[in-house]
Every structure is written in structure tokens, then in C-alpha cells.
Image (cartoon, helix red, strand yellow):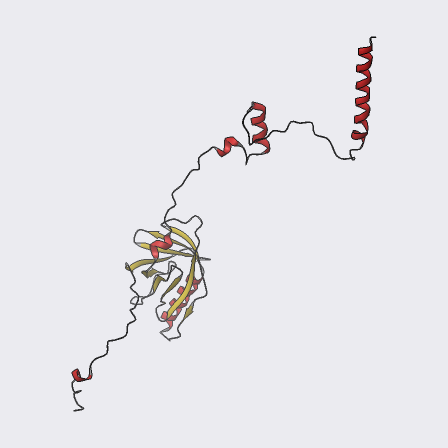
Length: 225
């Protein structure tokens, strides 16, 4: 064997001897991964192996994925916007009809977060929350807060209908607009309440201070002078 071969074998042996302590120093339960690692932020060398590795290990920073254009989807206008400042008259109370000549109404006011109206005997008011998830121009889920009302007394039949109406309104879960009708679906009710629109817009009551009248223009009040 020549001297060159002897020196080569001696060098390999010394190299293995040097790696031995390092390998033996690895704690038990740990392994040294010899699988390739790629930088997915660069594309100087974009081999099939690198592309597959980046897609599997770092999909967020994958250059191929980031080059895709976002898809924009037009959202439908929410039903809450359609109902703002409108008033509705109750025609059917959960399939039981309504008493003739008893006006039960529902108004949507404020910034779309308040409702009020007549229960048939008393005025009522409450807050309403429209859920924007999966909302469309004709259907939207809702939640209504505690309902407050005045305390006037009316005939028993009217009071009974009002009580059932306010209870159904308190537990409303969904509102749907179908043609000229507004349907309010409530918890534990098989059929909804049905309304028809009375006025396209509810004009708020103006609050104004009357102009002062000059005293020299005021004439005598009949019966006093």
C-alpha cells in the first residue's frame, strides 16, 4: 500500500473519531434530521422537490400561493337597512289572526337598533340587534332586548292579544321580508307573525319652539273683553 493511501485511511479514521464524541453527546430521545431544508422565499432554484417541500411545510409563505389574486364577492344589503324608519301593521299573530279594529304596530327607528309601536292597548319599546352573519336583503336573524310598555287597561281580549304579541316579539329570532309582507319568527312558535307596511317612512315628530308673537298684534280674547 502506498503512502498516499495510508495517509487517506488515517484521515478518515481521525474524522470518524472526531464525530464520535459529538454524536454520542446527543441526548436520548432526540434525533438529527438529515432531510433537506429549503428557503421558500427565494426562487433562484425552484426544483420540483423544493416546490413540493414548500407547499407541505410552509403554505403561508409559499410563493405560488401568494401570487394568487384575491376574489372579491359583493355582499347583499342587509335587511336592517331596508327596515330602517318603516312601520308595519300586524295582520296575523302566529296563525291565530287578530282582533278587528285593534291596531298592533311595529316600527324600526334610531340607527336601526330600536323598535317601538302599539301593542293594541299600550305603547311598547325595546332594543333590537341585527346579526350581520349570513344577512341578506330579505332575511336576517335578530335578538330583541327586554320590552317595556305603558300600563293602560283595555278589554280582556285586547289585553290577552297584546300579551301574546309582546311575548312573541320578545323571543323573535328571525325576520324575513317577502313581497308586501314582513314575517317575524319567534322561539317556540310554529307560525310567524305577519305584518304589512303602513307607511314607507316614519317621520320623526318635529320638536320646535314657536316664534314669539308681538303683544301689539294680539287681539282681545272673546268673552273676556
